[in-house]
Length: 60
Image (cartoon, rainbow, N blue to C red; front, side, top):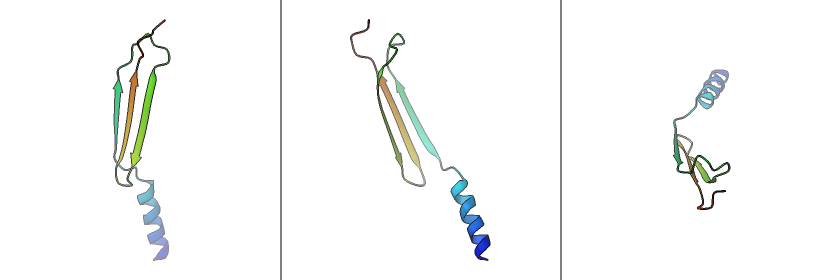
């Protein structure tokens, strides 16, 4: 019985939970290294990841 519970617990841990992935790409394509901010929150049942990029006014 305990072995069955352990196997079921490992199976549930191995299943990937839903994750929302938002990417706001607003940098200029000529910018080789745009500024970026990245954050992630994982609440156990649902995860959210956000990536935001931008370019400063000075392009060479």
